[in-house]
Amino acid sequence: MKILGIDSSGLVASAAILSDDTVVSEFTVNNKKTHSQTLLPMIEQVVKMAGIELEELDAIAVAAGPGSFTGLRIGSSTAKGMALALKKPILSIPTLEGLAYRLTPVTDELVCPLMDARRNQVYTGMYQYKEEGIEVVRQQEAVAIEELIEQVNALERPVVFLGDGVPVQKEALEANVTVPYRFAPAHLNRQSASAVAALGAVYYKEGKSEDARDHKPIYLRQSQAERERALRLKGEQA
Image 1 (cartoon, rainbow, N blue to C red):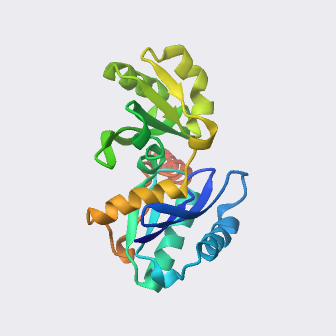
Image 2: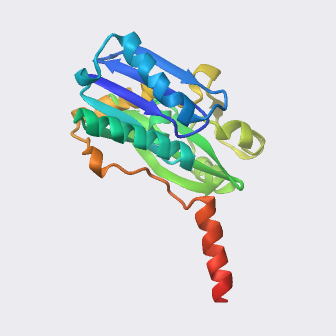
């Protein structure tokens, strides 16, 4: 089984090729460059370095959201265009599941990824390992950091945090989390296309693929432009 993994849902841009149970190539950057400039060249490089032809792919796995609205659109449109051209299925991986899958296979702790959603909110969920896959303890959602901390404390289990929301909310976590906790190390604390591809392989075996024409990003909430428009229309009506 050969799967191309793509993640441009946040600050990180990443592409990887998984062949059976081996990551044969991966290209990941976290340097604030525009994903529209970097993603396609990265995909070209990982495919070239893997020594495979695009036609050999069985599926394309993409981090489908939540995350940056622009990043999600770039990743999803790239995956969709390639899948349509190659006549391959898409494996739509919830961003936070893909991020959590970096750790769930190697820890008994709850894994709690955090992505900065701004306005003192985070995109988050809670996950644990189960039979080569991942079990969702709490579905991904957008919540205030105070609400997340209440949820974590209520579960009364050790937890590991990761994601770009950690440095933003680290002070609040350190001050208010009452259960045993830790932060993932630098080499495991951000999105990775290899994790998306590996979880995609699990999805593929479980029959969770979709036709490229049906694929849509998972936004969870309105974009800033949509929120501002709604407020403006509400003001006009008033």
